[in-house]
Length: 463
Image 1 (tube, rainbow, N blue to C red):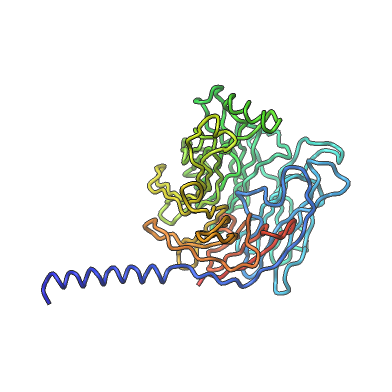
Image 2 (cartoon, rainbow, N blue to C red):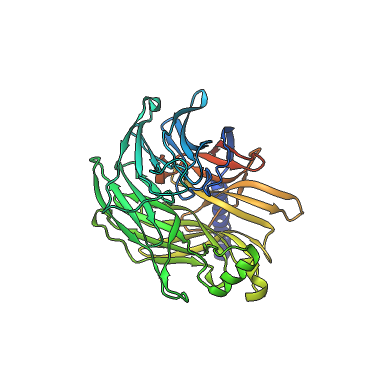
């Protein structure tokens, strides 16, 4: 064999080897369980069971699953007209094991440690049943995961001063299960978030304020409230990625929207911000970084998930819509509508990789991506579970969940369809950010297409 032919053979073998390795690593989802957990009556208070998007309402402790839900209180007026429910799934399926004694507005996120501790974040109102809104008191309820029916201990976070908490908490709850530490954030109006850190000695040993980025470029400069964040805590480093949530800052757009909706207000959800603290006990955060923006075309952004790799890289997942079509004809008629599920890697405050995992819309696929979540497997693979709807290339209607793998070099596998009878359109997962361990099993909890006001669960194993 000539030298040139030998090189060609080696090249072909390397290509085949790469293709084979990627084919082997393409995720193969197997649906093992698909079932309903509970049904709910809408409370009409602006916050349904899926409202606490950046958190999770399902965790896994060993072989048991725990999920929180909401129940409407018939004799209470909005906004504080629901109470929390706690469910457990054991060998006999789902059962309700506890119910909240007070009233609140928002769903109550869960976190856990793998040493049998289960925590629920509650925000009970301090107002009478006939009062629309008012002060609230953040609480963390500690259960025994092995015996949740035995009741709970009420933990009161320690704050920097005496913050004026209300039913609009926009709170975020995260756990470092390995180090037995947790953190709670809760918004105060449009200026900042209060936070409180509980250490491995079970002390609320650090507190502070996270001030919002400053919008100096707006016609009227103002703080940019950041909501629905994905947060994580790992070895006392804290990571925070959320979306702008302020009243429409551009007067001409606000006036045009009012002519359509009749409302004086409309919120923006257009800019994705990220910050982090190297050590939360210092109380110091780095300057805010803007990861993505659709501010010039009135689009929409929503954070999906966050994962911190062993090397310290921060992996971000979010969804985007390029434009607000209500504004297009008058303000940017040549812009195309694109929907995308996006991924980025942040290293030491710099975005070192950015890509769209799925794009749909005008000039692209007619399959539109929705919500997504990461899943880290026992073997160290990074998966993305997400929703897609629309029509396929042959015109067939599409409404399904898919899973793909993100390789260490940032490339992605082909997506695999998850063969669910009813796909999840809005969902939580048992995430590492809430203390659940890495696993080849996806625990999915949320609302499914065609199931109305029912919250469901599915277990999907990745081969």
